[in-house]
Image 1: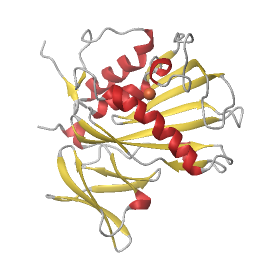
Image 2 (image 1 turned 135 degrees about the vertical axis):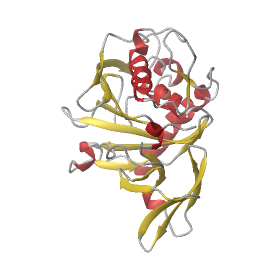
Image 3 (image 1 turned 45 degrees about the vertical axis):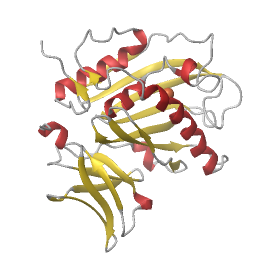
Image 4 (image 1 turned 30 degrees about the vertical axis):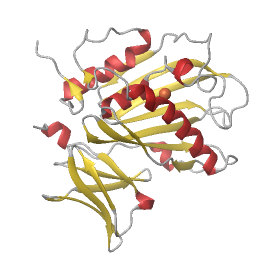
Length: 279
Ligand SMILES: [Fe+2]
């Protein structure tokens, strides 16, 4: 039984620009759906009929139940001068919640993205702030600082990058990072995760950058490379579902965001892809 809370969320199901009349057959929460263009309008259908649909951030979003709220906003998507980049899709054999949790984890940078997003001996994660912002009901991690050999395609040489992480929906995360080309602004890199089943997902990375120089294909190739490095880690994680009960995996400083994310999911009953253990 899938809970009402899970059914009331918005999930990405396609890149809007690629949806044509023939459409895309795919899964959402284990159910077959079809995403297609009908007289110019994008529709998402399942056996039971049409799903609620919205188009935002280059993607098509569908809600399998009654939407609990509007799709979250990313104000930076509307800033003039930013480049919005759809980065395609990476299919990963893991829980959709594990994919988000991995995106929130800074400690793996030196080990998984060696010499790109991190490097030894700079493996320490310094203290940062994490909280659930009650007024918007989102998880936020701020004041995250990390040494990076090559933080972005536009970065030359190593720099200490500052990050903020945001979880606005159970299967979406938005990362804000120091923008090498534009001091005082943040580059935005998001992942929108489509839960195909509890143990399989499509990850759609999306970016809103200040970068007029780097060719689109290079930006996409850079993100794809990063996510392929993550994929091998994600597909080998045990347990496969994300444990929501504290104590099942011991938290460290670096995992504070993950702890907050799990607490937030549990509180809201967003347990699709999660492992619950009876007390
Ligand atoms: Fe990673």
